View 1 (cartoon, rainbow, N blue to C red):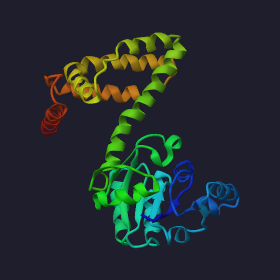
View 2: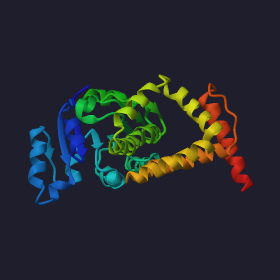
View 3: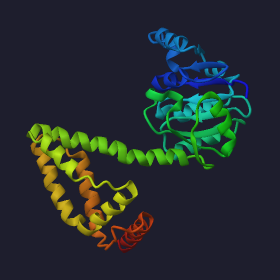
View 4: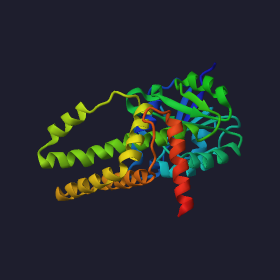
Length: 295
């Protein structure tokens, strides 16, 4: 396959990391900062040092591109897709690498596909600065595996997870509930632990309680514990919230935990901790639906 032309919409940290190791005939980029008198010089230098041609508008950046990579801020992703697609070549690929909800990506996809371009829902699953285009990614696109060869030609090799736009981003968004949630819990826990002078003891206790289970098994176990003991644990967590407040730490994450423990405990379900995760969730959903009907 001949080398392809690539264009970037947005050229921040992610754009630079990807562009630095791409295999392409040419790389162009448009970034809104090019229109800012105070920021334009630095942005133009960033691009030229990466062998990327700065473009002063979207049209000139993408008109000859075979592949367009959108790496803007999440709140601008939809607007960027709609504005960019109208200037793209028929059949060109639009890679939406922004961290957006699946419904947001589906709206962007409709705008892109209406112009004859091909929308690809891409989820970047690890920090991109270390590996650039070789970073682990997921992709979903109605064209299926047809998109993989041109992407591989420029050095991007996502794992195709389906034909439905939004599936890749769903995986990332729901993973982030856990990953970013644990980061937030870490801040809430260890700021308080350091203030109380017990950080090392708390850390050692957590190390000792590691189960070694895979995530699916751990999720099944956790939900059984919540349905079996949620009411008691909610009461304990209210005291945890009081402990945090006494240390001048806002119990933001703990407040959510109280609600979840109480709601799960109120279901009064007897679950098998070793049961299939899907079966457990189905039982929980049935119980929640029945509870809602009663109220």
